[in-house]
Image (cartoon, rainbow, N blue to C red; front, top):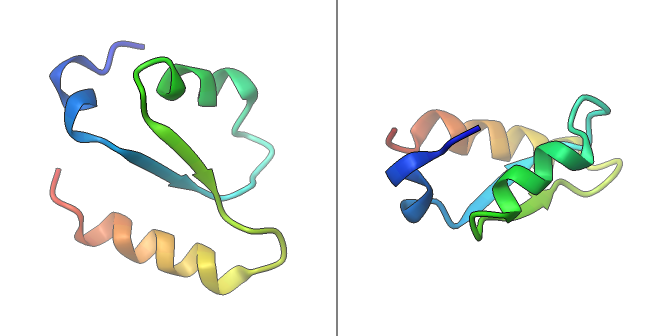
Length: 59
């Protein structure tokens, strides 16, 4: 996966702890200097906040 010029403006990736996010998924972002921040376990409200941020962040 090539993030191109967009990787320079991304500082964090906030994601939930779903099983579909593998170590190799995180490695792609960490290789470009993006910090992967998983939501805390058993905190459903944090996931809702992360999803709300996803809708308001400019793309």
